[in-house]
Amino acid sequence: MAKFYPALEHKHAEFIRAQHVFFTASGTADGRINLSPKGMDSLRILDTRRVAYLDLTGSGNETAAHLRHDGRLTLMFCSFAGDPLILRLYGRGRTLHRRDAEWASLRRQFASLPGERQIITLDIDAVQTSCGYAVPLYDYRRERETLARWAEKKGPAGLLAYWREKNRVSIDGLPTGLLED
Image (cartoon, rainbow, N blue to C red):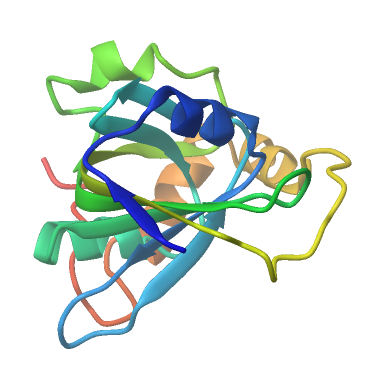
């Protein structure tokens, strides 16, 4: 049975820290819904009502566009090993860029990851747990190295060119704010 909480409890934080993958969901009233998997130890719990993840370069930048336009964001964590559980964090998200005052202090929370693009924060309105009984069991083997190799090969100038070409607007034409001054 689903249960709601106003903030993260210790057991929720421990569960989140044990996961190797999480999912982000965002959208706008008139556009496509975006659902994306994230990994590579990119998420940090800042306190019981706020989390952040280091967003890495991808083929699109939908979450940033949706947050700029609408602000709603959901993160979902699934237990793929051990006891079944699904945990969702609902709230309002915000995108931070290198040009933002909060960037430097928040960036220190994360290890260096290739292709880092921006930081996404979530101010949590509600935490929900549900059973997850139908989620299959999987064994974690390792992180993929594909993104790291790709980003390192591109280098800073290549990543900037890629962002200009692929990450400035969403698939629905909404601006992402990535390269604004």
